[in-house]
Length: 424
Ligand code: PMP
Image (cartoon, rainbow, N blue to C red; front, top):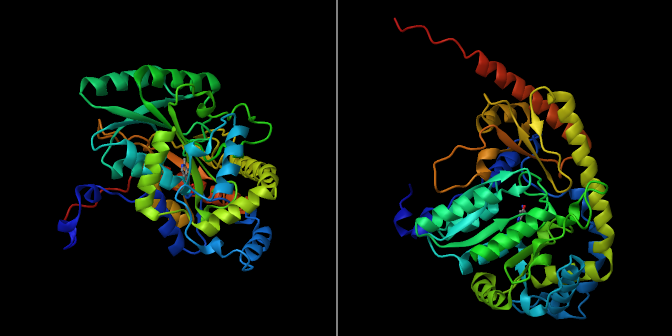
């Protein structure tokens, strides 16, 4: 409690920081720590030299608008590039439907502010992306968690949760889903399930918010363009608000992403964005546009796919070698994350301290479970391991540190230290 708490709005009183950001702070403090915590792209994938040339040309002075405020909707030539990308994803669109956002995180914030009143229910998977949880909580939405099966939302469980919420008199407005290489589980939802979700949302008149930052990062040989086809591509009745980003395909420092939504909603998102930041960075958008126009973006994609596939492979091999007898893990077909399950007796949150002492860190599973219907401590023995940023050697070393921490913790749990002798 600080002396200024009395000035806080109700919404601000409920705001919570992200567990992942806290891990970031930990990382900054401890030298030599190997971090599997934040889902950061690998530094060496950023095409720095090409970007230098682009930035140099843009700043040559011939066009000073590169440093001016721009339209809230976004830099028009970039919007045209995004429309082409959407068509390439099987979802042709129009400029009226598009809005450039300051990262997809802003897209989630705008979606939350425009679509949700306090107490409105949002259906999320258990587990789901922490940034979405934050955005929905900030507007005091009611988060209703639905069991995630091997293929994402279980339709039976989804409908049961919906029915219970409706019986309680709650408005169920939005279903939030990350169908491609979900953060945190790496899960790829199959096509039949995607179509079933669309059909369900139409039947129940719920809007789908489809968050799709990882779709380009499928591992060659493990998934295809067809596998990552967005729900939006099969949306026949304007049911889907689609978000995607250049953060994982170019660099997150630019903060350039987009929303594609029915025109009337995009117009509202634009108004909400005006209050937030007027426009996305003009210079950033101009760079991203050049990157796309010159073909650099398209050339990056195959490199990224093999970069992250190899890292995922290295992590899986290391886990198999070091922890094959104790831990199980997901087998992602793309993206940045492995989702690992510890023995039942262990608590991933509790283990962090010991892991940090061994020089490695991850995000404990509990952060990804949101359900306002019940006080849950789900995900206790689960952890998210991001393989995206560290080098192969650091991944191997990090997994071996993790294994040491887990084995130590296991023996501590199975043979608790003897009770202190009675005081005399
Ligand atoms: N959605 C998901 C599922 C993510 O994993 C991320 C990044 N961690 C974002 C949205 C936000 O991405 P950005 O704001 O960098 O576009």
